[in-house]
Amino acid sequence: MKSFKVIAITHKNFDLSELGKFHIDELNQKELLSNLKSTLGLDELMYLSTCNRVEFFIKSQEDFSFSFFKKFFEYFIPDCNDDETYQLITKTDVYHGILAAEHVLKVASSIESMVVGEREIITQVRNAFEKCRQNGLTGDFIRLLIRHTVETAKRVYTETNISTRPVSIVSLSFHGLKQLQMPLDSRVVFVGAGMTNRNMLRFVQKYGFTNIKIFNRTKENAVQLAKDFGAEGYGLEELSKLKDGFDILISCTGSEGAIVNADLYDRMLNGETDRKVIIDLAIPNDIASEVVEHNKVEYICVEKLRVISERNLKERAKEIASVEEIISSALEEFIDRHRERAVEIAMREVPEMVKDIKNRAMTDVFANELQSIDDESREVLEKVISYMEKKYISMPMIMAKEIMSKHKP
Image (cartoon, rainbow, N blue to C red; front, top):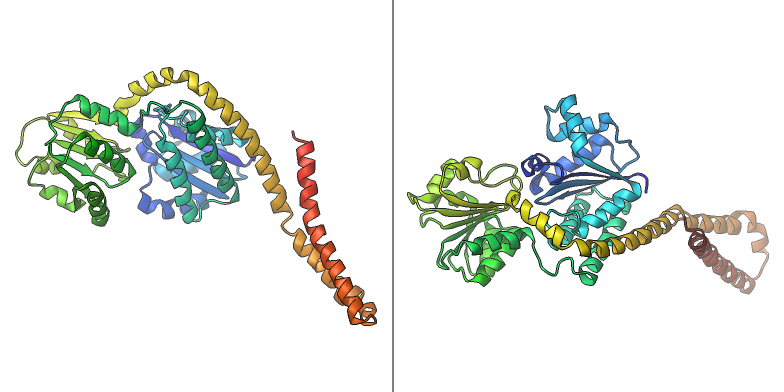
């Protein structure tokens, strides 16, 4: 447990634009995170990136020294000097051991989120783990922790009212769109075909918008998403050829830089001069700042939701106490699970050792004696030995668990 640590770069201490420096495109995650794991000498690594946080779950015997963080930050900001490294360290939240495990539970239960009670985080944590597992980055400890974390988060959302009035990034942004009272025949353009835009599409379609086009780097994904919602799907390169114009632009991709710059936006306008609505749900932003600054737009972005999240935090403060009780109980359960798992791992060699002792006894130590007994006696003897072998294999684990239950710290 002591070797588990978390590096958390979140909305609490960083501007959302700064978080973008630590975002890794999904297509590049395997290579870049594998290199990071190797460079820092980590045993296990899990990477979590959402609209308001980037976190690294780490299993490593290495101390988090200045030289460690120097390598870590230089990986994302190559020109980072010593002074900048110190500044980044002071802004970064770092957790160790039990406190790190508790932090993961809190993140998945949404009480660390910019918008408390957003249920998306549990899916984001699960998907982030699965991606890192497939990329060969995680191991037994993080697997055990995330499984327990997901179980705990489900309890939180079932047993408390933390999310009874959903105020996720998607629902908040759609609420902002509704307040603008756009006509239902408005031309809606989506950029990106990920889960956030899928969720936004549900709101948009349910509200009554029907003129919808979806653009995505992988055209097949855009076409499939469009098919699910009765829209039209295109490749991202076709966005510059948009002839019908648009009234509402909704974008959320995993790009490491702006998707829509000033030149592309001008082409999309196709000569139109009326005010547009832009909803940018990506971190870093998909819409270049000059687009917002130099055009007539109603702009909704993640950064602007900070005020709402603070208000929601106050409204849901009474629920946080109930959530923390569940997390406290879950943390104790995980400590027990981790200790049991540590014993299981330590005793993996016991079965082979017992079998090796049996084989040596039969083929070496008592070989001569066994030759002198009849087949029936030999059969009985082998049954007795096999019975004892099974008991010797199972008993140490049973006894170890009993000892742990009687001597909990």
